[in-house]
Image 1 (cartoon, rainbow, N blue to C red):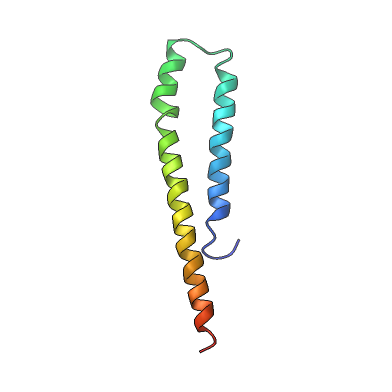
Image 2 (image 1 turned 45 degrees about the vertical axis):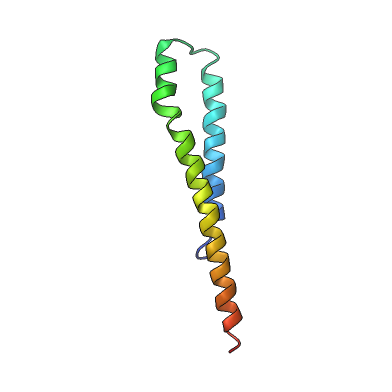
Length: 78
């Protein structure tokens, strides 16, 4: 991983969210009472928008880093 590389961390975060959803789906096959619904509402649902916002922000920041790296490499010849 190179300095300023955000893609591997973002990829891990996206994969973790996917795994969480898969595991939750599996859990709800046998756990579907009031407590399960409360657990999902209190613990899983709040994560989804936060993770998606974080991934969006990481994408935008990665673009800034890439642009800065290009700008720096372009100025090396001067």
